Length: 48
Image 1 (tube, rainbow, N blue to C red):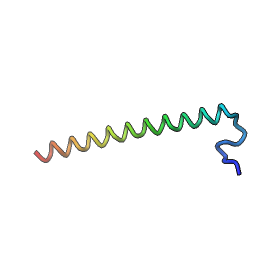
Image 2: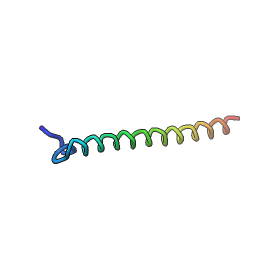
Image 3: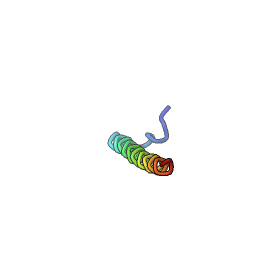
């Protein structure tokens, strides 16, 4: 059974969509890392 994400798409479109999803995942990971670092810094300052 073919996934809806791949149905009626060319090979290049599937590859491009896959790469885009990986790029978005990396962006999200970087953003969450920044948020966590900010939270850690705030907690560090409050504990002093």
